[in-house]
Image (cartoon, rainbow, N blue to C red; front, side, top):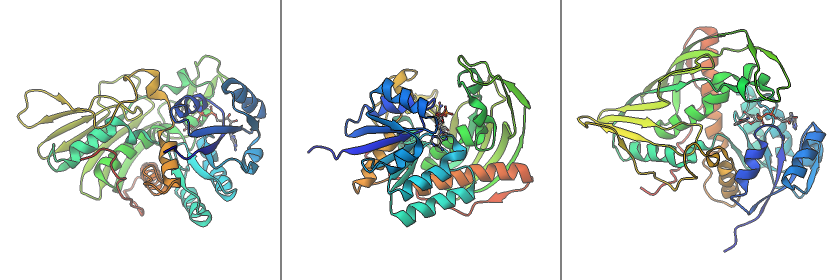
Length: 367
Ligand SMILES: NC(=O)c1ccc[n+]([C@@H]2O[C@H](COP(=O)([O-])OP(=O)(O)OC[C@H]3O[C@@H](n4cnc5c(N)ncnc54)[C@H](O)[C@@H]3O)[C@@H](O)[C@H]2O)c1
């Protein structure tokens, strides 16, 4: 049976835009019909480059009745307002991470989705990839026994070396916590369930950074948010994770994520990628074992396939068609509250207890 066609409008045609267009080409039933940007010249150029039939400013996109789903690729500080506008225009919305930049804005976004009855989904979607699902399968099948602790380390994204205007990554809504944190926290919550409390510390490593990216539109950036944080994150299950989220660590041998159970250790792949080796070492094993991927791979690790986006949009389309919704708004809100609580705890030098919870999304593999 032919899949239902969904007509997509993409809001924001900056750095990540091309990776959505190439990734969505995997799903011919997800048809990109318009691109909108407050920088209309940029939308026009993006439409011409990718043969998208209609382009214009943001309001033309909201007003286009032929658009069913809006993919929101604006910078984080614009997410809440633009998501609410799109929902109120009758669109289903998939928004890049983070869902919003404050808990209050996140709540307003959830309320708008409930009020309008539209489906809202959010990045990250890498927890739907083969590597994260392989890790989840290992935990659910008891291969490391009962999870007790975890570590998660975000090293440097080096954004000033590749993004032409990375200022938003060093201002509120960015930083290692809000920019890279969503990938790590989404995978931890998918594996271990919701977070309950956080105790963190943070600091600005270097107050002004030099941009070296080719084609840069700014030379320096004033840093206004913590770029180096350490935290103890306690899950409702009792698991205690230690995290370091930093844009000040240029080189390191630390792993991405490890989960320690009563019977062994699980070592996870890069949470920013869909595929990668997931390794287990049970008590007494002489060496690590690479687990069989729980799902088909997108492509070899390190190839362009790994950077393409669209899986979360396909997940949202499933929900629009009445199927399960995994990268859903309640999950994204809990991830957001976790990250805001981490930053809040660091700012206020006190432990923060979360108010939200969420279900672990339905697994994609068959047990
Ligand atoms: N760049 C990456 O590698 C990357 C990777 C993963 C996720 N993301 C996420 O994708 C989003 C966009 O990041 P980017 O790097 O492409 O940013 P960018 O600054 O390169 O592009 C953002 C675009 O949005 C437009 N815009 C701003 N406000 C708007 C509004 N109100 N309405 C319509 N258009 C508006 C800007 O004119 C610009 O063209 C962010 O949420 C970011 O966290 C980026």
